[in-house]
Length: 122
Image 1 (tube, helix red, strand yellow):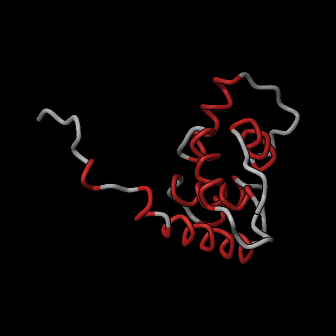
Image 2: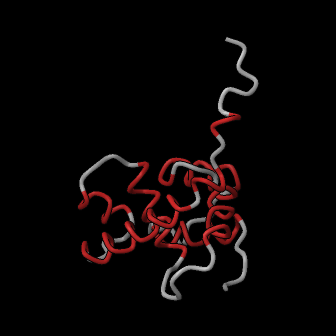
């Protein structure tokens, strides 16, 4: 099992995936970046990654980020590949679907429909 990651690690990998390694960003900008491309703040992505462990030993955090781009950015595969640094389309597809299956396997553990309308007044 790999060591748990935190939000700082997620943002560092996110900058690499998006080709922004040399760019200095404050915490608010990093949070907007994660929400804009991956659909969730870095802390949530870190929690998800940590819950997915253990994974295939070749799985990397960047593969989870690729999958989140796939879910959040509704576009063609070529656009997704461009966003995440032009991996080979076959490799992108392989890791995206691997991670999506792992995320889907968490549904019984993290989704509670009993609480879906909790706090709803309408």
